[in-house]
Image 1 (cartoon, helix red, strand yellow):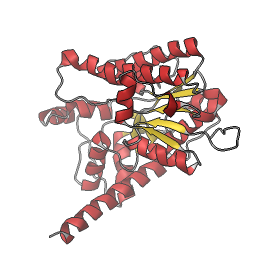
Image 2 (tube, rainbow, N blue to C red):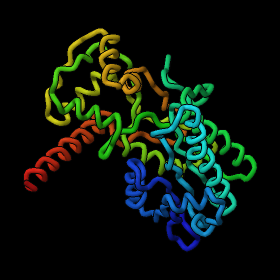
Image 3 (cartoon, rainbow, N blue to C red):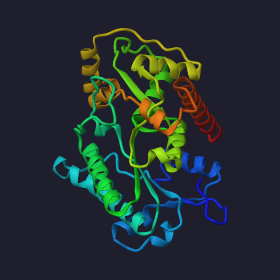
Image 4 (cartoon, rainbow, N blue to C red):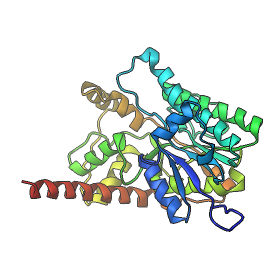
Length: 323
C-alpha cells in the first residue's frame, strides 16, 4: 500500500466488504498490511443522502467500490432499470464525487463484463463498443461513463475493472449450483456443450484489484479480468468433480433438448448464462499492470471444489451431532 509521510500505510476504503468478493478482498488487503475502512450499508446510505463523509474518506490510498445490486426480486420489468440505476449508477457517482472532494487519489470501480455483452463471437476487448443487453449491465455502463466525466472534472484517477463470472470458496448463486451438480455424480447430458467461457477466481480478482490500487498503469484504464484460460461447461464440471474426488458422468445430448429440459424447471436463463460463449482478452491487462494471476484456473477450481466438499461434510456432521 502507499504510505503517509510518517511511513505508515494509508488505509483503503472498501465498499461491499461483507459480500463474497469483498470478504476475500478485505482479508487480502489486511494481509498486505493495509488498514481497511469498510463502508457498510449505513455509510452508503449517508452517501446517497448527500451527507458529509469526507472524514471517512480523507487520507486514504483509494476507494475500491464493490457494492452493487446484482439481483432484484419482486420488481416489475418497467421499474427494474430504475432500481439498478439507483444502486449501481447513482450511488457510485455520489461516492466518487465525495472521494474526489476529500482528495482521494484513486477510485477503483468493479463493473462487469456484461457491459461488453452476454455472448462473445470472439474474445471481448476493453476497447470494444459497449453492448449491455440487461438492466444490470446498463446501469454499470452508465456508472462507468459518469466516472470518466468525474475524472475529467476533478482529476481523481479512475480505474474500471470488468470481471466475468467469479468463483472461489464461499461462492453462491449459479456457480454453487454447478458445484452441486459436480458433487452429485449423476449422469448429466452436457457433454455436447462446447461454448467456452472466461472465469476469474476470487483470489486472482482480489490480487488484481489490489494491483489496480497501486500500479501507475491502471490509472484511467478499463481493464478486463480473467484467469487467462477459458473453459467449456463439460470441462468445468469435470475439474470440479476431480477437485472433490468425485466421478464426472457426462453424456452427449442435443443442446436444444437440454435447454428445453432446463426451461421445464424454470432454469432456461441460468442455462443460457452458463453455456453461451463469453470469452475475454485479458492479455492487455496482464501487460499494462505487469501482472499474472497467482492461481491457475485448475488450481482455483480445485480449491473451490475442496471448499464445497468440506462445507457439505461439515454440514452433514453438524446435522448428525445435533440429532
